[in-house]
Amino acid sequence: MFIDREAELAQLETLYALERADLFVLYGRRRVGKTELLRAFCAGKPHIFFIATLSSDRDQLATFSQEIYSLTHAEVPEGFTFPSWEAALRALAELPGHPIVVMDEFTYLIGGNKAILSILQKVWDETLRNSKVFLILCGSYIGMMETDVLGYKAPLYGRRTGNLLLNPLELPAVPAFFPGYTPIQQIEAWAVLGGMPYYLAAFSDNVNIFANIRQQILDMHGLLYHEPRLLLMEELREPRNYFSILRAIAQGRTRLNEIALKSGVGNSPMTARYLDLLQQMRLIYRRVPATENQPEKSKKGLYHIVDPFLRFWFRYVHPYQNSLDLGMSDGVLAQRVRPTFDQFVGYAFEDAARAYIARLARSGNLSFLPERIGSWWDQTGEIDVVAVSDSEEALLVGECKWSVNLVGTDILEDLNNKTRTILTAGRWTNVFYYLFSRSGFTPELQVKAGREGIQLVSAEECLH
Image (cartoon, rainbow, N blue to C red):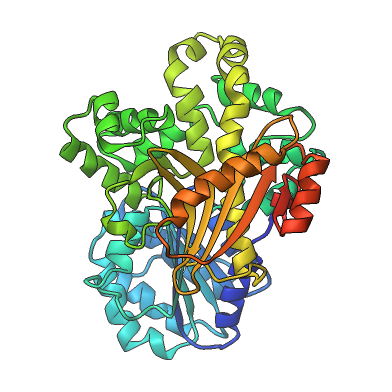
């Protein structure tokens, strides 16, 4: 099942239509759907799809050589291989037509033979750039791809004709995975799984959310039970310390000193180094109030886990690993997950609301063009959704309620009070109010909103 990715496919198709030599770099986290995107792009076109492994460099070269030979020959001679990577790469220029050559898991090749990057640079400059080969380098180690392939000091710097960091699917793609769920259930599924296609495909809308969590995440034989552990152990040298840090963040320790103390990995400077690497891997991010006009210099930063599934796993699986290993998944579900599940989804609903505002801005349906979208907090309180444009002196504020109760005028009044604190800075003259609700709005609030131009957004609308 291939869902969404229209914009990404269009980017590839636009380049391919130019019928020239292209060197395209695609990268992103594991399970994000890179390979499926490339298979959809290659469908119906002459292509080579080579997936690197952890085998020896000689075996990799032999496999790649046979993929090249098989594109133009019905049978490949047993044991056929080019004498070198340079010879194999030069052979790509002799392929007929406008072929696509995918080198998937490219970082495995780099790990086994650092010289491949320099060899490819030489062959590209001397031969391939004058051919019609559409060469795609694809990898999952984001830091290595950005440094060794895309970086300023990398051999291939300046050669690429396009690149794409493939991000998880956004919330509006989720209903296609769960057409049998209600909008509320679809948001709950997204709150647990995020936008990784592999994770979303693990759940079924034939059973409810809790049954899926029990079967696929909490059961030691479930498809996603070991997933984060395998992901981090494959990419990190000291997974134990990173696990402790992620668990601390998932449990609400979001300041540097709190994370250092709770995780026990060392002092704040040492913890900061671990946090920097987790940021490079796109597993966590540092959030500052959206009203800060120099966020990189702000001292108000809080750390959050980017991926909803990692948030769920480090909140509900990792702390109870021993119990789950003993087969106590029903107990963990009943005593740990269910009592706090609405609160957990509520935090994700705030992310969904901020993403909704971003989509409005991208589509031109917001009253101004924001420069920053996030949230706001100080000693007196916090606002869930904030979008800022300093150039247009515009401010958007929003409150989210994941509750079975209707949102009423008291929530709007509370938002007004907190907004006055922000407005004392005198930087914004145009203020826009949004309220987001799981269950709807009281008639009184609806009348007031219509009269004052306040936007009321239901959970279902956040799916669009």
